[in-house]
Image 1: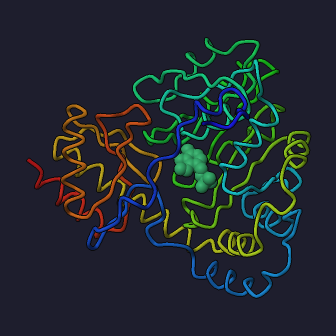
Image 2 (image 1 turned 60 degrees about the horizontal axis):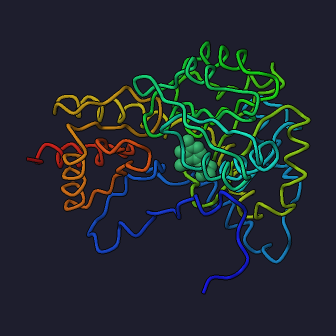
Length: 358
Ligand code: PMP
């Protein structure tokens, strides 16, 4: 017998998250290239800062994240009063939906967009709406044509996940300028560090009242397990998000680790440099094997196969060699595999395994 109490409409439309670490079980010498993690791990400075913060774990952490916000502001050239930190950028996405969407409103995202947009929209009681891409690139015109009076949020990941494609700043600006004032444009910059010369849209946030940027420590900074992200937004929006944010949402260890990580410029620069080199090698190697693959501006590539059956067979083959990649069926790409860019030896291992398929 089920309980007489029911969740809000929309909640049971959210599929339980499948995946995570279980794919690694029983695999000898596994190479995990499925979650776009930094293959070099966190910066040593971040590890030291976390160890130093650990003994204070009986104390509640900072509620205003002032020290981390100051570090982010200094490094990124942002206004620290317009930064709000969250448990991963996931939490910022969640806050935005809680605060600005709701029953009777729509939340737009691209057809193959990051799963959290839909989850957070449904959790807020709003209707998530998928807008198709064009050739796996965010289609600004399709979004502008679909936006209506009930649209409150438009989420764009740039670089996009799982495609790795990049939307130039002119197109993002055109999108921002074409949206009604009643709609926020959220630029999800989870992979922004890997796109050379891209500021994640920060300058546009400074110039507009309805543009928000989200960023994370999970990718370039190698701290996916620590769960730290942030939003950069107009002051009134930051004020709203801070009202619904739990006062102690980030642990002291997480705050210390993220601050040390963003201050260690040499470490992240080296990770980004290696990523660009290995991304080029992986892309070139895939194409040489006749596997379709767009240029990626992120730390992963989307390898496209003949059909879903072939992608599945390649996935199984890679797994038999201990290589775990993402089969993004849930993103609507059953014919593709998303491969995180790894260390030089990882690129060699992946290309070697792919060459031996068939
Ligand atoms: N946005 C995109 C596009 C992502 O791929 C991810 C992580 N997979 C996130 C946001 C969330 O990252 P986190 O919560 O770790 O900051």
